[in-house]
Image (cartoon, rainbow, N blue to C red; front, side, top):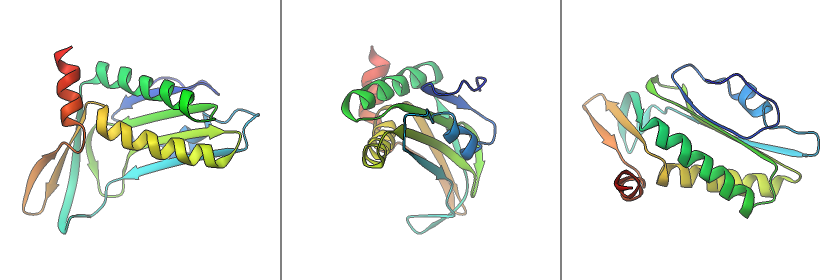
Length: 155
């Protein structure tokens, strides 16, 4: 991952453990009064199936570009100041953080709204794929991203 620069937008992929607090503090400029941070982590059960671990892959160069587009769009649509998105790749164990989205804004409502929009759009449009490994098998989860990913790969 890149060396942190304070108060700038950032989008990163990496395989190291994510420090949610450190990531969140990178988007806190003095003019803001709220930071909303999503800590998405690996859960033990999905749809009634026991999960052993997850594995994430990405089309890395395209994923970063698409995350940057989301940040730009969020800044146009919401009254926010800075956004940081970091997604982990590789094998993740139960309880480990897979994605952190942190949004700084002058007021909390805009930060909440933007953070919720960003995670939904990240799952829908960014070419990051998740394999869930269960006690009784495994499967790749495409979520809402398959149609958009296919469109992007054809460009």
